[in-house]
Image (cartoon, rainbow, N blue to C red):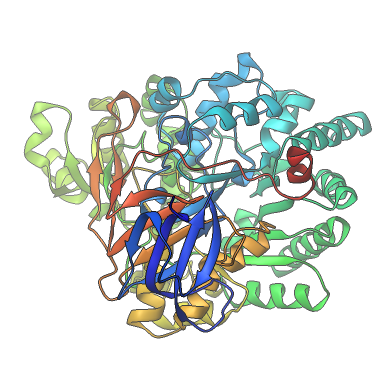
Length: 600
């Protein structure tokens, strides 16, 4: 009888703990790493020849939105293809539980607007066999998964459940009874394995809007609510807080006092909870804030967008304004208002002269985030008379059709084609000299990077986690699930910013530590066998292509890894030379006290 289920022979091991690399065999049995060392005489059901390859822990992604996709895609692809073995979902305060049956449609509309998840996919792909958060966890548990999932309790649906949708969206301060009920439901969620809580707070001028064009529920929540729930985590000594608290007007306006007020609040949340608070970091000011927090003994940890180095983090693709509504939200309130609602509602707004004036007023902001609209390309027309303008700039189309104003031209063309015209806009978050204008804020260097020196600062931050792929969201406008592979290629192989030992700590061991996943992120005996095997010199990422593989025939952007030979999740091979094995080896990650109760 074989001693191991899988035996990985002769690879160079990077253990995810920054230990020096070493050559060893790894024996895997019953889903865990049973033995590491020289195992020459040992046998296994499957032997993987890792000569000339690196063997490392699976990549951990702390920021995804696979809350719906997991129900139709066990691999949560492209993440599962790119060596990601564990993800946190339910980020930014958005999600689907607890949600009353009569509010399901609005919950899906929210995800369509804010995270650009196609409505038809959710309608066809989600079972909706839950109402409460514990029921949602039970549904996730019985759903086949090829990666590991740690769900957070998002605060928008929690607040809507307790306060009622309209009252929660109004920005009202919850009553003492409502805060108590939120605390009770949070305890209930933690009991069944929730990994903590999440919230986005961008303020009433949020750059990421709800389905009706208004701010999200958590955008207008109060400090008191977050502190109240943070104390629940502190009393239990478990859970994490994903907290995207950056007011849009502060981000682009530079109000230093308001920014400092936000940071003092985040530190207070970390203090009263005693738990990790995961924030998105941008420039030098954020790095200084994190360093100051750590100096106070507070667990405030930064995550960075890292795929802009050597590869655009959001590659422009042709999309209609309905598909690109989330990006247009970032172009200012005028554009957010104009593009919110049903197709008929949006067409009516685009025809309204006052709405167009609001869009014109926000043109400076639009240019900052999506480029000069004169250069937008009409990629695909929906009516025969406009087909001849495909691959033509908006400026040229407008001139040919006799429009004197670009906003008028854009609105009229979209109205004529029932919003089906597909446009290619400038990619978000790309390095460009165009971004050095008056609207540029030096603290936003990761949104508007100037070159490798920006990313060298990220590499030099020992506690900064790469990635935050947003996997499951914005599937038509970007794909960043390759962030871990990209980090190894660009930050180590191409630029030499880090050693491989440090890089594997940053994409595996460090995020596991920050998310309190105590048994993940490292290759050690007794740990679950979440492992990747790859050829470092051959490692690469394919070009991005459109895949029409979502429910309802919806398309998305995808890419795949090169040189990644094996992905192993809980001791089972899920990817073999970029081919799915079809095994549902993933599990729900219930950490801390919830894990102990589950084991009992």
